[in-house]
Image (tube, rainbow, N blue to C red; front, side, top):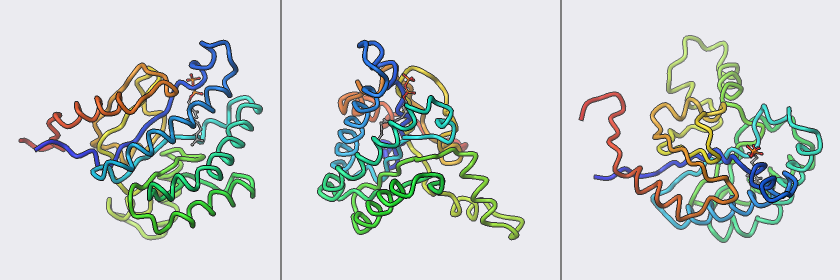
Amino acid sequence: MSNRPSHIAIIMDGNGRWAEAQGRNRSHGHEQGAEIVRTITSYCSNHPEIDQLSLYAFSTENWKRPKLEVEFLMKLLEKYLKSERSTYLNNNVRFEPIGDLSIFSKSLRKVIDDLQNATHDCNGLVQNLALNYGARDEIVRAVNNLLPHTPITVEQLNNALDCKHNIDLLIRTGGDHRLSNFLLWQSAYAELFFTDTLWPDFTTKELETIIKKFRTVERRFGGLN
Ligand code: FPP
């Protein structure tokens, strides 16, 4: 039996380099990256064997970027989450933000809340969008929420996380081979795929090729087959 890619996670890297290679500024790469978010989410929503798609949109470390780039990303997110509402609804996609949202502006938080509420009853794909997300931060927040209940079990900690679902397939675009603090707990037994393709060039065809390879991997989860 082949593996089912029930939960796919993607580290969407390479927007800046993609834009710079064309002599454009990095913002242009992020804009194009947002288009690919739409394309890949639609593709996954049309494949019922995929239940969850987790996307790394903004990390707890991304605040270190130049102020103008951070501001641009915040505006882009707000614009995207507003304008794509009908795409989420038409594709029956439930929007689930993960990360510490308390840091965002009131207006962005409202847009996030509105989309989450609007898609609450969608029962197709779940899109977990990582916003001000860091896995270490997620784990620390979860532990703090469980205190003073000690000792805790693996299951209790798992259920206190923003994202409670094991990842089957984790993809990173952009050529680097690292996890960059993304869904570390949930990736414990994920199959990892790295591609040199920059995120704005990533296509559904490449995703299909990766899924095809993933299906044939022997997953043992620490046991013996
Ligand atoms: C990494 O590329 C990408 C990000 C830090 C942000 C991801 C954002 C998007 C895909 C677009 C916005 C998303 C939504 C949902 C509207 P990079 O800037 O690190 O690229 P580089 O490694 O080439 O510099």
